[in-house]
Length: 180
Ligand code: MG
Image 1 (tube, rainbow, N blue to C red):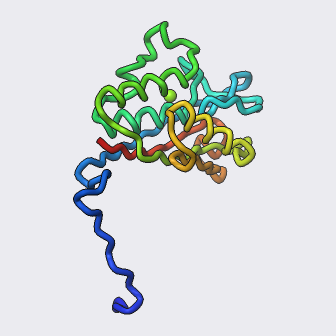
Image 2 (image 1 turned 180 degrees about the vertical axis):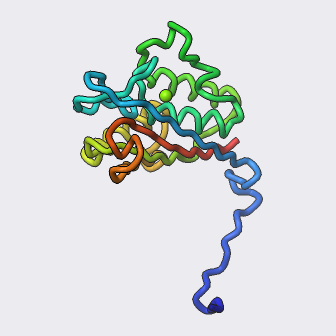
Image 3 (image 1 turned 30 degrees about the horizontal axis):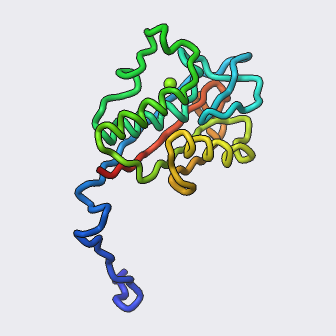
């Protein structure tokens, strides 16, 4: 198939004077996976989701925040969540992962990075996250001092496959773009 020059839109180039020049952009990736067990609280993005199962974890097991922290730290080349908040430390036992997110926010500010946007996907079989997505997104934007539209959260089921699909685990994947 040949490209139709008439219908191909012109390539828009980012001007050198743009406040977000290409050379200052940094991307990061993060993911997390926790087993789900009966009787644990399910917290995602700092929002409590009513459900009979929740993740086992040293902290509150908030996979979404953990994946986002790793994406942000990775984009800034500042290591990973385990380095900054080790699960061997009693200090982080049962702590809200919002604390990690706020600390990562400060680390980015100190190192001169600004968040452009975050995109994340939560993988879980049940419950359906659609009714909670708006609250989760707003909570994350607020914790990071971001405007509406800078954080995107999506949900996907495991289609009955693997540990997520069988309802035995919850996972999250995130990418973050920073400007510096
Ligand atoms: Mg984790």
